[in-house]
Every structure is written in C-alpha cells, then in structure tokens.
Image 1 (cartoon, rainbow, N blue to C red):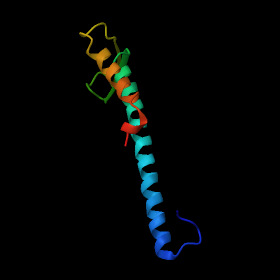
Image 2: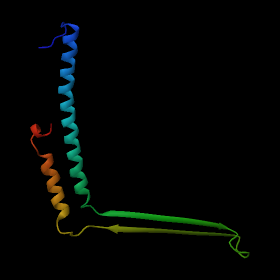
Image 3: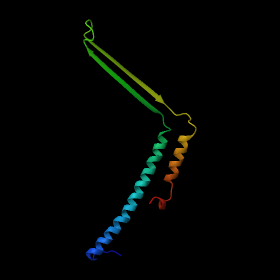
Image 4: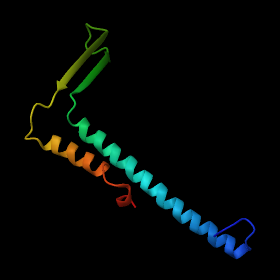
Length: 107
C-alpha cells in the first residue's frame, strides 16, 4: 500500500496509480453526464418550437419625392410535432436505457 513516508520512486508510482484510478472515475462521470444530456436532446425533439424573424430597412432619398423610407416586418412560426412514426419516442427510450446502464459498464 502507498503511504506518505515511501521512497521517491515508489511514491511516484503510487501517485500514477491514484491518477489512473481517478481518471477512470472522471471518465465514467463524463460518460454519465453525456448520457443524461442525450436524454434531454432526445426529449427536446418532442417539444414545440417557435421561430421569430424580423427585418428593418431604411433608404435615404429613394426617390426625388420621398426623402426617407423605412420598412419593417416581423414574422413568427410555431411548429409542434404531432406524430412521425414513433422515431422520436424510440430515441428517448434508447437514451434512457443507455443512462440506466450499470456503473460497471461506464468504464
């Protein structure tokens, strides 16, 4: 077992072993976080979306009779998935299944 009073070479080896073990834990934590994010991404495909677009145009002296001209427009588009054959729901189930894996399979 590694302890504080070990020789320098042994101490370095012990430090490397601890780092390797810690990196496996960190790697598994990142994998779990990524799987949780994939669940949210898959669930996001089921949510409605709202898109907005606007334009503003200004012209100085477009004609001799009009000194300035301004035009503005705005548009909104809302979409909501109704049914696309169940592919989105299958993706959500699959992402949740990956997240539910036992911890031993994350490394």
